[in-house]
Length: 281
Image 1 (spheres, helix red, strand yellow):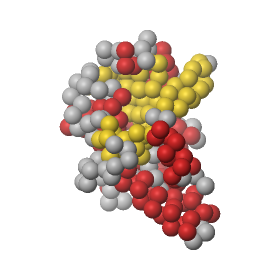
Image 2: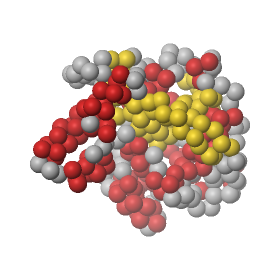
Image 3: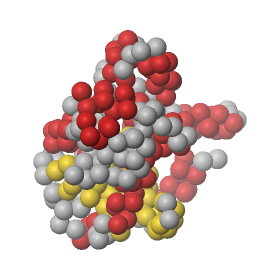
């Protein structure tokens, strides 16, 4: 039985201050009261000490898992029904249906006047498999390294529902086949009848409101749209820091398409092949 679905464990976590709820502005809500109807509410578990090994560095971060209350309530309702009918063997299906995002707090960003932040979209092929068809894996590792090396640390938001710029792993696999047939990454999305970028940063903004607050922060990104989206969600004091890393012969064409779409990537960035070092200038 998954303990996050167990009411007794839930009670224990609430009493220990390890389970709380926030709204779209990052303010705490009553975790035991029904969430306000029609308003965003996110349940958060943590902090959980998480020792990491990134390159040659070893350090411990504080991990928080976050899921929308509406999603969690649906899964818990299904779980109660499955328990009543002896269907616990299907619990794994409930877990796979939830988009659980993560917050990694590195060091002490609360002490920083202008902390470093990365909002990272999940990428199974890049982050897990080590694919070179994109730069996601190197960006993820580099972001953690930069947060660790920053004097006050920083915050990394890992968005689990953002695979393939929000289209999911199955559709992403189809776009790869279309790219191999000659289309670029955005053309492939359009061929499937999908938006160029369907990612929603509402949850990321709520988490940043909570963990960063109403302060300026520096966002590791080459994508101006990400800044615009966060601005629209109330995070208005965001400055971008370029995050160019992981360029190679496999992903040059992919990155060129991102540059043409508006990402801050220069010809010099794309001419540097197999360079694993981030370039800040």
